[in-house]
Length: 190
Image: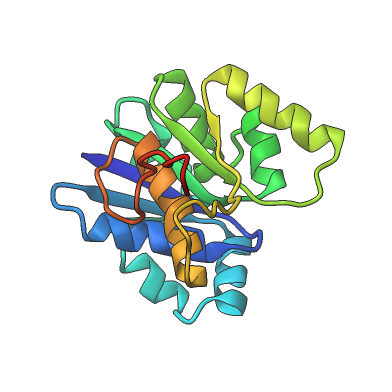
């Protein structure tokens, strides 16, 4: 399985980093990575790793301005793509087919080839323009997965909350994982 991960410059780069870590632990998954310049800046601000260390989590990393890189073409076979986190700028570009860099071009290709595209859209609160762009992407075939915490699995740490969101992204990319305990129903007597 070959997956493409994108990291943009909105807060929450920990989601992309954790996604890369989880994929690195999954046998048979080859990861490709595109980090935007703003994503590089946000990694420097938020992460306990350098940009180089984050790139090293992937099998192959590309410059965001390398529009001739393999993921820019539909003939480069990938099984899915996730952008974690996905800025509203990147979401807008994808919603409007504005493929001006490798990340947005690869997302556009993912949609046109009918492959899974999962966007961990990160902004709050949302205005109508954000919501309209999310709807456009959903209508094009993408999945909007805002990193909203769930509590049915009784998270004990911030890492547990992050793992739940990353696990939901992995589910949508058809990657097996054990990042969180799945809901088994509730006894009414509880």
